[in-house]
Image (cartoon, rainbow, N blue to C red; front, side, top):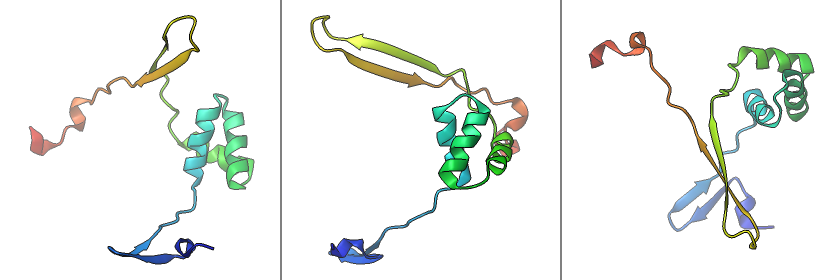
Length: 108
């Protein structure tokens, strides 16, 4: 067993620790939203990832804002036709418009 598997270990720069955070239901819901577009399937996936009842995951899922659908994705095939295909996927999120009421008074 490696000496680095402990909670704290010493390096030439001083003691080091790795922080371990337990996953949250919101993270499981975000992962489920990336896997499926159906809300029921998202609730099933998040519930199975976290080990919570499906109803609890669905209630939390409905509280969160739905993911944005206006994201532009570009798929391009590069290289000659005789060579193996390389796929390049680019994601460019659209700019969000900030309403005038959201600007802080100190910046005017």
